[in-house]
Length: 500
Image (cartoon, rainbow, N blue to C red):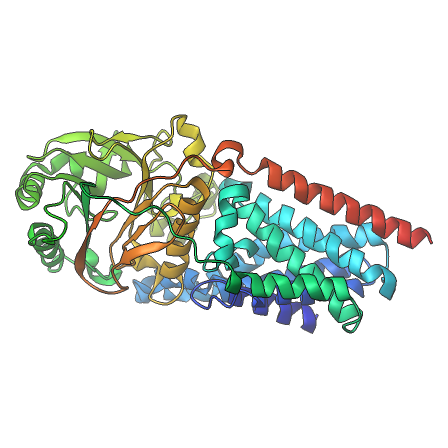
């Protein structure tokens, strides 16, 4: 159990901002080996649950940050939220652990230990993929995400996030083999060494660079801390700051921006009642189009909205966030909580948001083309872009990461935006309230950025797109099929070894 817990915690150190990617396969190898001695499925499930709980408590500790925005009211919920959240996600580790023990049926001798470890790791990869879709999904801090800040990121263009996870679990299996055989496994040693050294030998991939005449975008980062953002005396302070950043002189080397982008929920009034505010925003932007995040009502429920404004301030189009954050933007099973009279929990999101109709493209005209918008949480999901049919010219991400604190959450969110760019071969422009606002090229590399907790604006030429990647054409199915075949092969090997 101690080995499982240690391995789970170590595996989390591959995630941003630690970015110690070898820690992830090493930690997973320790978790896999902790299951080899489990006397049965029940014991294995408990070890998998413990490992997953440790992993998610370390990797996703930022989940407590929203509860301290109003600490007097909600601070007491923070430890419960972290524990329940980590344990809930850890079920996706407990299930493959128990299934591995069911196949192996008892303690594994040394000659079968590697196959059993490989079986668990392959099943874990499949379970982590399922975590991205079950109960609306939460594909954050997956094993493959440890590779985002390495040159392995280029593999995402071929096999997506599941392909990165395959690299991690394969390396973990080789490490487990080395541990079991006390270093007397030359093929595993060579494979593990290659996995660790390869990112140092590969050239750092970079996407195509914007050429002369490329359209210029200004990203506005007002830096409004969440505990002050909606305070009555501070709303005009952040609004005026954003207007000043919008109206600031352009970079002489780039020229005037043709598009200005504000972060999520940065409009200080409802979009439905924003004539005066949009007029001032348009005046600050001059001849540029504006994209701004705000709230609007459709019927009796609010929507988290991105609005496209023409020069002059007229609303050209709106996009409503369609994948809302459970317990953050809406209350799942609201009628159950009402019946149980859990008023404190229900009060966190009174009424909640209504989700939009789904993914969409915005046409920004000849210069900027068609853009695929993502609001905050939506950027963690790789598959929605395929729902719009036509390929966009670039991706836009507006977010308010002030909810996530100042340590790990914003950096992990930025990493996932980089992954979206590498998967699709499309640049991503990201406007974040408190940071990190960034321009990301079509291979997932950050071209320029504004620091976390910094107020400012970032002018950049829009990077060009690459041709559609293999992953853009096929999605996750090829990598999932390979993972399933590996799991099947490992299961067959375990049973054959057991028969002998």
